Structure formats: C-alpha cells, structure tokens
Image 1 (cartoon, rainbow, N blue to C red):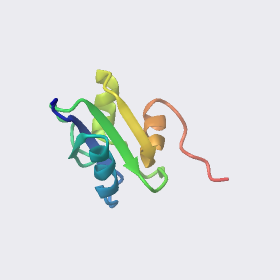
Image 2: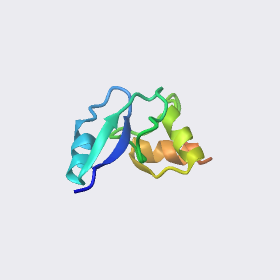
Image 3: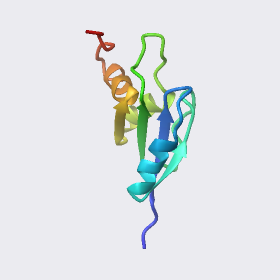
Image 4: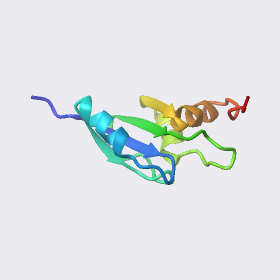
Length: 97
C-alpha cells in the first residue's frame, strides 16, 4: 500500500478547516493545515486553498500560494481559494453584481 498524498491546506483566516481536511481524507490524502502567512512545507505534493467566503480586497494572498505557483506545484482553489488563485495569477478581485 502506498503512502497517502500530503496536501498543504490553507483556509481563509477565521474559517474552520475541518470540512476541507475531511475532503482530503476522503480522497485518501493527508492534510497539513498551515496558516495564511506560513511557507509551503517541503514535504507536501500539492496545495489546497479554500474557504466559504469571498476574497475581499483587504485579504492577503497566502504565502504558500505564491511559492506553490513559482515551484509548479499542483494547486486547487475552492471558493475563497479560487479567488485567491485568480488574483495570484494576475486576475481582478471579484465584482459584486
């Protein structure tokens, strides 16, 4: 049996990471929860950036997100994380309609 994939997980500050930890475990992975200002751990194979709220103009991009992009790591953005990924790659902040 192979070792589970280790995935770094950053959630929007103040949000509960548990639903995303559970999702990674459901996919036979092992999550490594890190704070938004923490560097990407060297022992992970990918990064999930997630959150239920929208990305605000006052939110800061997670440090690990820029590192993962620069290193060519797989990145999955969900909700808040999708918006963070968009902005990290040069996109605009979400527009309320």
